[in-house]
Amino acid sequence: MAKLGVNVDHVATVRQARGINEPDPVTAAAIAELAGADSITVHLREDRRHIQDRDVEVLRKTVKTKLNLEMAATDEMVGIALKILPDYVTLVPEKREELTTEGGLDVLRNRAPLKKTVELLQQGGIVVSLFVDPDIEQIKESHRVGADTIEIHTGTYCEARRADERKLELAKIHNAIRAGRKLGLGVNAGHGLNYQNVQDVVALGGIDEFNIGHSIVSRALLVGFERAVREMAALIRKEG
Image (cartoon, rainbow, N blue to C red):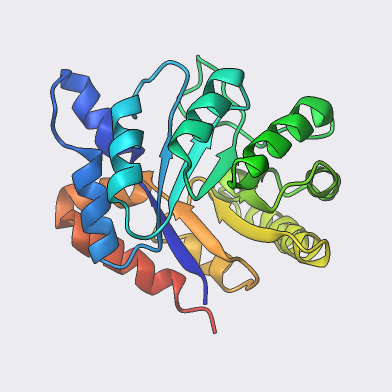
């Protein structure tokens, strides 16, 4: 049965809009766990636009499931990860001007620095996941650089408007899942998934964990955080 990782970045986005101390992503994480989340995800960005260092430090002490730290493969972030020691790290591409992560890592072009980063994090006892597009060559290279897990970028599927486009993107995701499994990698998925489009991805099978944030936080504004998490968890766990 697939697991649900809840990303609380956008709780921090609301807080930072006013520059005050509420709403607190740490509180949101606790509610998410009570509602059935299997892990908590936060992305500590270079520009600190939402999640702050304090959030990660407190979450490390309070999260009772697992803490997934999304981060760029930079010296600063590696240092923070080795100090905080999250349960696992997901390496993602990061550009200052982007509103949200726009695609997967180019592991093929960055194999040497990524291999070094993966090794450093693993030496600290941290499980390492690479956020990649559903591209077989990128997945093979993720295995070569030593990643433990891949997280398949589902954004293109989620943005597809026509049925034939969605079918094509689902096929790519399915093939990516099979490739990751064949290589012995853990397989997660995330980006753009919501209450309407997640079910077709769940039906593919083979995904260990879905990492979902924006859709849950958006629904929580209307129905409450606990209910929003429970509803998403119910959709995720329909597999099998």
